[in-house]
Image (cartoon, rainbow, N blue to C red):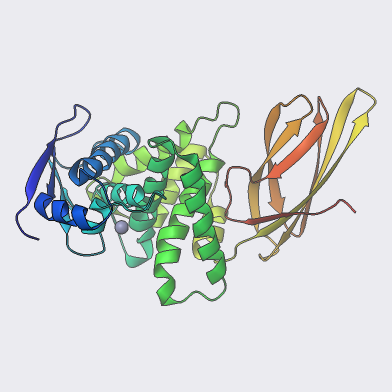
Length: 338
Ligand SMILES: [Zn+2]
């Protein structure tokens, strides 16, 4: 690597962080290639901001000083109190968010993988899936970029769907990282309060799970127990469908509305479900737009080949969107009522 320059970050929210970078090499690279002018500061910002964000949502990290070090390879890796970051993330050519999420992913391993260690290889998603989700969450809530957040979720869904039914060892990354992140995204949305759009219930689960297993090993079952204690509902169905199973549903939405004598509207909804076992069940959000521009969110329990529901609305519904927040790992289509 050559000699490192040390860039110190002091920020009242977090322990001290030292970024190691071969600044001289980057000056030479900068003359040849596009890229950031101050790579250590760009990288340091994500390291510091993700460290602060994860401390807030997950709880205190294990160490008193953190190091982020450039390596002459294409990957990243996390060690106790230290993250290795590929040299290419210090160049940051791409603007699609992968660099920011990559840095946050590696930092998230201080909680998931190192703070809480997966007990067996079957629990590996508690490290890589959680770290990938943490990178997405950082993109949405700290960098405030919904577009990149949803773009990556959709890209990952496409990868996962492409592999369903014929998963092989080479799909490790797609299944453990990308689907693992999707499982947390689904849990988060199940727990989302649609009235306030607050997600405190979900972050409480994450903080509690981390706090309980900090410095120890945990299994998927341990995580499930923490979730169940918070929401007071058995969650076997959820973990069976999304972690033990590989089926990915397709939903086909149809709807029609009619005025009722009480000057209200009856909204009839029909959702056909395909590509999953008959008993596959999942609450799926629907966004309803009303004449006048108001929006309402409801959850429909989709189960079996056909689910039908009728809702009474105060105004005429003008548009419906099934799964508007990417709450469920599913394909969504629409069809006419007849
Ligand atoms: Zn990782």
